[in-house]
Length: 185
Ligand code: FNR
Image 1 (cartoon, rainbow, N blue to C red):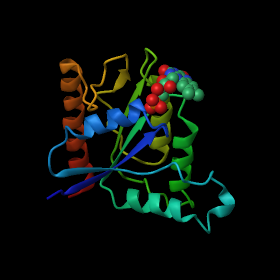
Image 2 (cartoon, rainbow, N blue to C red):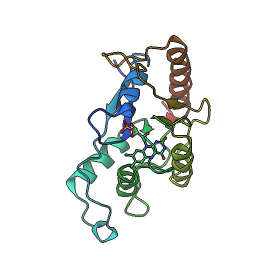
Image 3 (cartoon, helix red, strand yellow):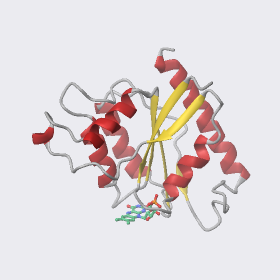
Image 4 (cartoon, helix red, strand yellow):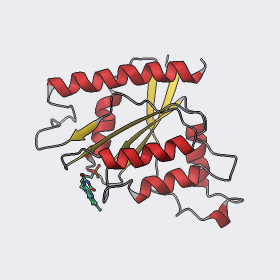
């Protein structure tokens, strides 16, 4: 039986998102006591502070999924050298009202894939600054900057390169230890 529940937030809404594929490929590598569940962010309202006292049901749902999780994995694309707006919007929604953030203390992991050669490094760096402010202990190493070219995934969504699979396995091993250490279980 699974002892650790991890919320996965993908910073792309696109059906064929390479970041969603990366998220699924990586979470398949985790041990059996870890369960990963995608949290929807495509149906959230644009964050408006006037709604803090009356948050939408979709925001409450996201906050509840994060609050009940033992950790949060962010798998993000890079838009114009930063975090996609949809991801920042989700974070802003679930971090409010002030003092009622869903994120505080949750051990975080950050990964990303792009068709550009720096593999979302700048987006991830911006995200790490946000997560520090949210008081999330965030795994520092290894950094996962994936440059996706044709053939990176097979038709089942598996990573084709054995070297990259081993690298991602190393990340998963570190992240699950990070969650065990910080979750207090
Ligand atoms: C991009 N892309 C991109 N790539 C990158 O490496 N750095 C960047 O700054 C940007 N900027 C950017 C802006 C916008 C608006 C789009 C639509 C795209 C390309 C991006 O890596 C590519 O579209 C990925 O496929 C996006 O990830 P998903 O949606 O496939 O997960």
